[in-house]
Length: 400
Image (cartoon, rainbow, N blue to C red; front, side):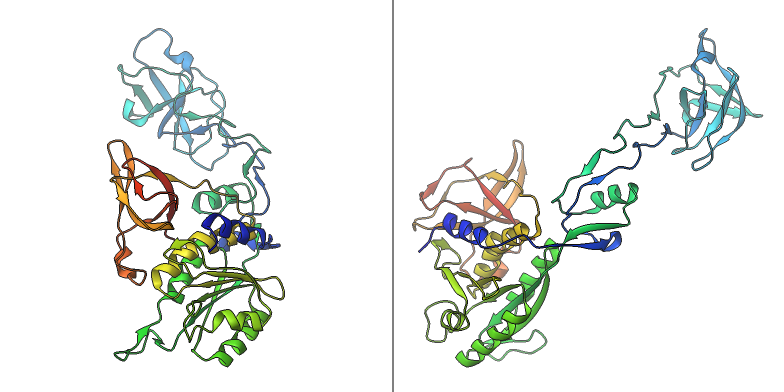
């Protein structure tokens, strides 16, 4: 068996970066940015009022007496900048408005009383020039790169791109990912299973994770346990899909047709069997056109774990997405695992006094997908150990 480390490196060495495509901003969420985004103006672009109230000149407060200012107009958000020329005049201002020319102080509405177009400032108000004014360019300067290439576009990144005038973005192409379940025991989810059958869940689970990642478009299908039909199905998929993920039929059983069928249709096998639990009978190869082929075990927890540990990172590299540092979290309690295998252990994250810790939630077996409902992901216990102490920090992989 190959180690987890060697399996992961082998996969990454056999995938290449996909081209980019142009995408309208409204459809770019979760996609991978393939060019830097720079601001076309200072942020903020003007001296911005941060509180409703009045804008005045600080020289009106010299002397220490209670200040009474004449209101000469309203500076509302979105209106042209007005000018304040007299010391004891002021403008009513709204949050988000431009600071009137000549004004250098904002007094919040809570600190003033207004009567007959005059604003009287509370005696308790402490003058601080510049307070409640969001200065032009104080966040970012014109031409500064705000979004680097290779990031995943979420809500805050979309907001920044919109503010910089990007109606379209160059993003990584979204490949077609074939997700294929196998086995005669599987029926459609709208069917009532016979006592010897179960509904298909793996393909829907992996498709959901794929869509959450923004890294591909799932295309679901199913192969029955028939060698010739598996081979014919693979020939078709190899002509239409850019990435292929299969679930089940990859072990050593009499009806596990995939290893032989993959070889028959020209898939080059790079490894089969990984020293890990769950997911030992995992095969990776490349098709005749170089497309990655991931043949995952059929047990639900094995398939879901291998998909997160191997397939998602491979797709991230193909998208040109910047590598994320793997979070390491400490064990909340000691844990033992005797087999000399890497153990992907489902966990729950608990926030304690000293920060986040992980509580092991071992599943009953690799088919126990209901057992991970209250977990946040899995940690990776190295094969070299058997007893893992409390407080030991280990790599954490979140469920998508």
